[in-house]
Amino acid sequence: MGEHKLQWGLKNRLSRITNNGKIIMLAVDHGYFQGPTTGLENPRRTIEPLLPYVDSLMVTRGVLRTSVEPSTDIPIVLRVSGGTSILKELSNEVVTTSMEEAIRLNASAVAVSIFVGADHEKESLDNLAKVVDEGERYGMPVLAVTAVGREMNRDARYLALASRIAAELGAHMVKTYYCEDFYKVVEGCPVPVVIAGGKKIAEKDALQLAYNAIKDGALGVDMGRNIFQSEDPVAMVKALRAVVKEGKSVEEAYSLFTRESGKQIKVVQKVQPGEDLD
Ligand code: R5P
Image 1 (cartoon, rainbow, N blue to C red):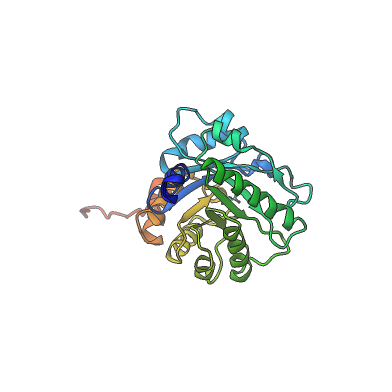
Image 2: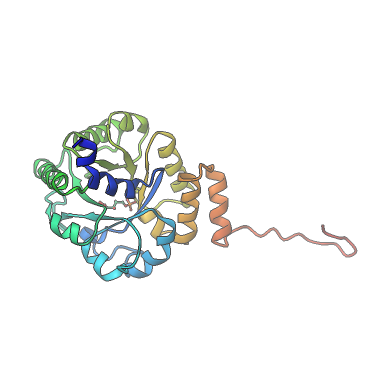
């Protein structure tokens, strides 16, 4: 049997995530080390209205079980590394969820963070390598997340290093941050790259970030706070779709956002007595 057929399950799962095109993955896994992050205090309330507009959902098993209906037909990217909190050293992660559990939850991929250059770089790379081995055994793709410590520069040199290491260890997809010369990160990484959104910024800036990333070769976005902390998350995800999946300009997408969120500036025309308006 050829390699292609042997890896059918893995490729089938991966195609559910990549959806044969540019992708929007909704990241709502922040609670695994941040607790009830702003906008995710009640995960179900945040997630449900956004599901029709995203291609996949990145989530922990706890939120999946409690806050997503099992009948929902959305590919799941299950976060399986963690075990740390914002009160301690974040790089000291372990694998928190087994491959067996990921299969039981019908995950389409699993996600593991790596912390290149941090105190526990080696352990986090070991987590990734072991999960990739398990993933290959059971046909489960692995998304590596390049977590960036406060002391690291989010520049192309660092992000290309971290992304390439993730791919070399066998990750099937890499999630990293956008940066200047981002095309160098994509070029140096032999598997598809998606970007995280990072801290909440103005909606138009987040749309620009997504636009730039796609232009530089990203497969898509794996965005959280810039969607669910938006003043109108549904309008924001629709605008993101316009940029990521429909090739619209930032201006077009932002005007969609303002229209959808009811934010458009209402121009009040003063009509003089006896004057008609078209
Ligand atoms: C952080 O490690 C989590 O994996 C988040 O999913 C990630 O940071 C993406 O979310 P955001 O767009 O909010 O940065």
